[in-house]
Image (cartoon, rainbow, N blue to C red; front, side, top):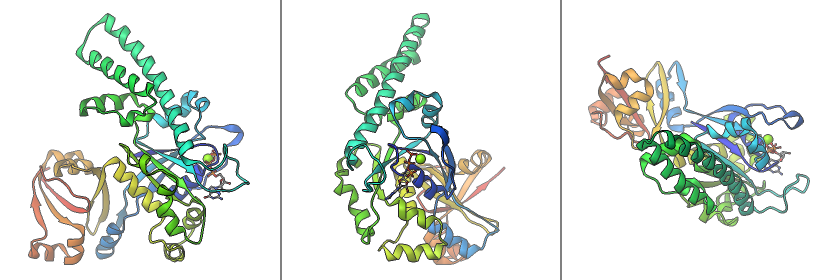
Length: 360
Ligand SMILES: Nc1nc2c(ncn2[C@@H]2O[C@H](COP(=O)(O)OP(=O)(O)OP(=O)(O)O)[C@@H](O)[C@H]2O)c(=O)[nH]1
Ligand SMILES: [Mg+2]
């Protein structure tokens, strides 16, 4: 899974990238638009607690890739490399300035809704251009040879055009599952699920401020739209956290009245937005978290581990993570009946521990 970090100039995009990936970045020299690429470990307390029980040789968290691009604008989007970096992501994280700092320039005063509308419009205008290009090509191809697929594509593109001409993003267009697949192939920017990340001021009441920020800046309605989410972070505090040991970080968070870091909340929101869940494979060799779409069947989860496992799937020994911790061992869980056998069609739940029995 890959997320693109976008936003206006100097809003904290790179600060957020550093907090997520804990990766040092140099300055982009001379207006270079080269993207920073990095991987964030998905923090998961459930996995950590099971690992403490099993003491595995290897502990593997799920991971999310992030790309930090230069500030977004109509001009930037005209550059092929810049646009390409954004087209191939699964979701967008739009960093929105909500901190006041007179020393850091911004287009006018702090106004998250205005900034959101402006960036949204940039995405929509870019998509309109792409849609028109595609439509022209499809029309040409249709003159050469009529196929049902091309006709369906044309119909979808026409509908998409009408939609964006109303200045609405494609992520809010109603589509059949089939059309959704089709439109994904075009990699339109306003079609991608989006998470608005309000970057707010540091304060002594940060816990409360973070919780209230979405409503305070009038983002509640925006956040409730299809394929959209919003949350607040304080990049400044997170940057400090990123450099601390886990213990120090917990104490530091506590001093602000916080339980979780922005990193944990942001990744969780991204999972929610994309409809993703985690399941685990647990053993003395390796304890590992895997990511699948909500609603996946056991056989599909097996396929996420290895295609052979889905091909030769027999049964999945299944237990929810907290039941396993509670029992203290698989043997005890089996005796209690909390460890059970599920078939191919079983719908995997967030936090399930699976052991795939296979014939391969
Ligand atoms: N006061 C304050 N300053 C911040 C905060 N977050 C980022 N900054 C500062 O804002 C400036 C820009 O931060 P970056 O993370 O580089 O922003 P950016 O969006 O990547 O900027 P560009 O890539 O140049 O568009 C830096 O000087 C940061 O220290 C914040 O929460 N509060
Ligand atoms: Mg930057």
